Image 1 (cartoon, rainbow, N blue to C red):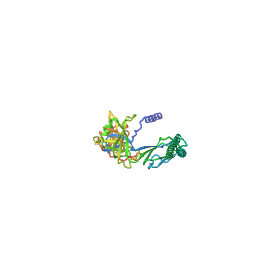
Image 2 (cartoon, rainbow, N blue to C red):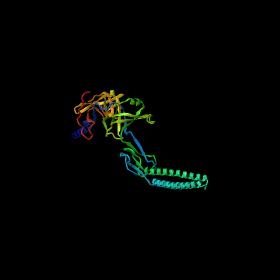
Image 3 (cartoon, rainbow, N blue to C red):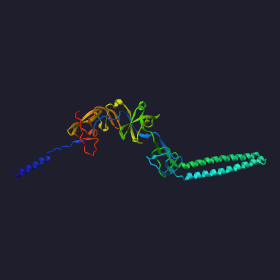
Image 4 (spheres, rainbow, N blue to C red):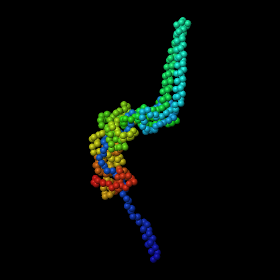
Length: 375
């Protein structure tokens, strides 16, 4: 009897060990979503470029020397006549003194040659010496006068070089680059700073050969800064390079910004857009991460409300343009619908997901979304 009870207990234990554990219900995965709305950006060809000054100057010393002082850094606002850097003036000062000494010696020789010439003129008048001797004295006087002029010019150049030890801004503007430090020996004409002058601002872009003709025909050009994508600025083509870049085979184009305002700063990234009115009608701009390839075409996940959760539905879309700020869709979705914008390759049709707004910080709790129902 005891043996039977023991065997029964062992059998129950084995059966209990072999039974499957109760399934664990997984919480719905979060998904980042974005509600579609008509975009304020214009459709059309888009080129990215950098905001530059229309006039940019390479600044360099006019003589060689050792840098002993640098007064400005990159981004410094300078005025005309402001000293930017200095060279060691010792050698230049010695050269100036030597030139002045040579000038003084030349003047003494000139004075002596003049006195000699006048004396020999008197002697020739009294027939004490021949005419040829006077000619030699007059030639010596002429040479002395020429040496005075030469020494005077050399002294002037040496004096000017003492001023060349200071690098001075010739225009008001902003220092955009500095390539020299104190203690460095620089050669004359070597660029040590770049100065962007105050005044007009423009965007430098690279345009392929196939778009040059269209660019010439465009009248209204739109410019949008990356820092202010909702603000449209007006621009016009000022200059198209006459030849293509040897490496990229594109043409450098400068687009002037009309009334740029204080928000437009040098070095900012800007998009230059050639408007297309037909393409802009009904265009939807979505994040590039929302669009993926499906069966040879483009698609997105459209979210349908299931209570507090959402259920993804595959929707094929028509892409009008891939841009740096997103993808411009021409059809397949409507304003007001909500789409997934992250992890689209891991979503399975029909699974329930927890929506998280793309505008909500990751550390903050997700706000409830108004999901449009229906396909």
